[in-house]
Image (cartoon, rainbow, N blue to C red; front, side, top):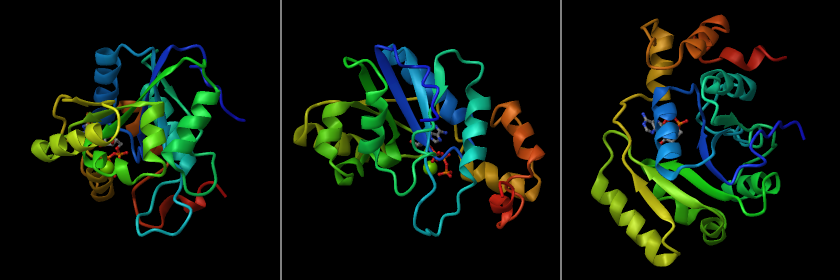
Length: 220
Ligand code: ATP
Ligand code: MG
């Protein structure tokens, strides 16, 4: 496979999944906070693949999102980016991703899966959630505006149902979102300081987020 996997020898890895359309400082601050708190050797960013079926949410081309993630993580020696999901055709399930990642690692690797508070209550509905929870710890991170009592209720429920391998972590409140950045870029408002300069340069270079029919053409 076309994967450098510069994390094969790590004893512990945190996986930061996301669409990263585009990646921003909220993602990076979160990843660094988790790395420090759980003392993981590396955080592996995992840009999500293209939805196989036509959904109403349009996502920028895989390769753009992958490259922006590489640019954004370049200055952190503990950050890596994986192609596992973007190179896989069809719908991606977290369990398949974790299994594939695990095959590249030491057999005794400890895995943490970072997920936003907004996704935690869905975990139980994921494919093979019980087996998934057995394979890795989950780290639920808050983001501004999320109702914490709801989060604690969800975590309690998961802990009760499965083993208690769901952690909660508060990260510095960065009210940054990719959708807001896309919307700003579209109307020509500044996006500077919301994301790394290299990512801003990339967005301008390829004219991303300018119109709705955008980048489909660029990789033909
Ligand atoms: P969109 O606005 O398109 O939904 P997003 O900013 O939420 O994008 P995603 O790629 O969907 O970015 O997020 C990946 C993960 O990062 C999710 O688990 C999400 O909860 C988390 N995350 C996103 N923004 C922040 C932030 N500002 N602070 C902390 N966590 C965040
Ligand atoms: Mg989101």
